[in-house]
Image (tube, rainbow, N blue to C red; front, side):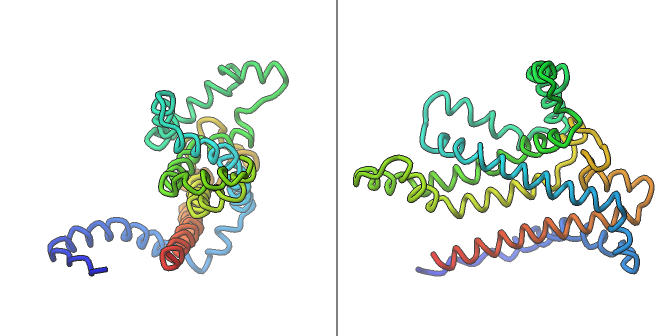
Length: 264
């Protein structure tokens, strides 16, 4: 393979400006942290409860994304009818919706007087302003990330190996477990990591649909928002903590992709 042609020199200037635009605010935030008190600032009871709740609900929402997103992505990748063309934009719509709008939509769907929530309420099941509402809000905004990642992987992999396995007599269940899932492994991991990271940082839909009850619905982004008004140093420290967790996720995903690319 021949080496790609070099880039024009002028292109490095806007590239550097773009990189600085992202990095300078992060550096400024890190410089603002009261590092001698960092441990104390992030270890208050409300902060640790918010972090624990964020990790637990993000994990639960990621599992829901896997449960529903994997079949959904494969259906979108393997079919190309009118229904699929209509459904795909709706599934991906939360990618561009303001999170607050997503929270309002969830509230009118699963709230006490919502489209579905009124029947759940009659059965004694309340979702809005509970921990379950946090998980649903995170799933709503995270599911498209997994679907779009896995659908792309499924379209790239194609269905040739599945057809060969079926031709050799493998039943559909065996084809699914022995052929389809291994082929989609890298895309599945990428989608799951992105869904987890998006869930961890969710704010608007959670606040609108689940509220901010300490230990019940107050996740780490909500705790940061509240601390910003009462203790700016704690808010900055918690923000750096959240950035560190997100960076670990992104770096882990990037290194996995690099290893996969090197193996290819």
